[in-house]
Image 1: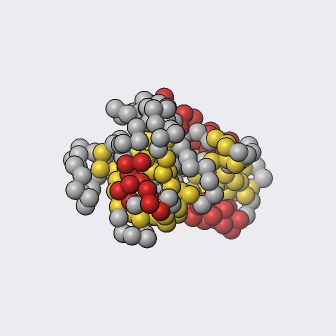
Image 2: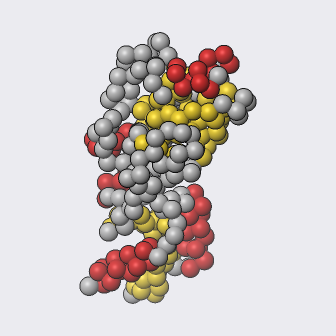
Length: 252
């Protein structure tokens, strides 16, 4: 009974929250649900661990862009497609497959929109690897690399806004609400200690909601810090393992 009350309390708490939630892809005409799931798991390349993350419309990132072409043309990409250097696609280390991204070259003002279908580039400082076609539109065929700004503008191969002139699918949802699976990231006798940990997690993972819940034990009050908003138990467990959280409890 107490568990049911706790769950209902969490549902009420988050139903009134206006914080934007990330889009959780399931499948598309480009990427199967199984591929999406596989591409969102932590992975290691050259000894460095990467943690894929979900994103929302308007999320941005800055860094260096490069491009890749003939040497990869016709080979498989991370989502299972055959790479075609004459299409507007790109590789990103952590954003979901089929995320639509506006790439703006900050050195010449040129921009284009690409669909992520691969992982990479695994070079320090580089945030995206554009296809030959996209790279040419950005002027990368001349400069090789350039400082760029990335902005999430759509999902599942569809653009949510129409600033670029690309076709907008009015049925594309900007966000999909997450389920309330949670990970316990700490337990404290002192409320201030729990509050500090919750604040730290809220700042580091703004797409989730970290809360402090008070429990009564035979030894007195205990403040548990919960990070809520995982779509499934599997995703919560994956987060726990990727971040090395020992003894964390995952529950709905």
